[in-house]
Image (cartoon, rainbow, N blue to C red; front, side):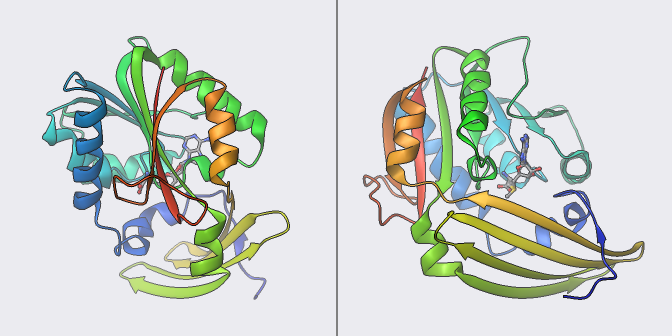
Length: 249
Ligand SMILES: C[S@@+](CC[C@H](N)C(=O)[O-])C[C@H]1O[C@@H](n2cnc3c(N)ncnc32)[C@H](O)[C@@H]1O
């Protein structure tokens, strides 16, 4: 790895090329799935949504009109929020706000909270996971739903024990390398990026939690409604690569 890259915080430089890196993700389909889960388990009563770790807003833009929901989307990265506001024009249907999902407060509790695409995996200690669950619980109305996903050790082992790709668009080029350590279950991804402002590196560390670990942690704060395998309505197993959790306050 060359050394002339400036180390940058996660999602500070990547923000501008994030949608390129994620172009394989079908957010419309994902939003359809989450809308269905909210209808199924919220029994039609979900009107207000708080999304955590919303990134560049691609998911929010697909889900919000389906309710239509009163929708607030938050992220800790100002650079990601800037991209989100540019993408969705900040036109009032979705309110974007800065928040660290381990320590935030909202003035009016919501019917449902969402955290999608590995947000949980970015928390690598049980203390941080507890902090997330406490903050979400405080933000929900009684009986409110928290819907989140996780990627698992099976995902890291099957798809990306060692993984490398690259991409380029005007003003942004990246090389991504990712490695998984089965002993610690830490999955480290390095982005080396070239922009008109220079060359930057971001290191992202995620933890691959097992199904049982998350079940134990989440059960301390919420009633588990369902843990689904991937984008299905089948129960998750330890072989699941992605799990969608639906839990109730
Ligand atoms: C893999 S991206 C997913 C973004 C979006 N949910 C999506 O599906 O495209 C993870 C996001 O979580 C955000 N994030 C990581 N740690 C966070 C924290 N402690 N509080 C709030 N957001 C956080 C990052 O800034 C990033 O936007």
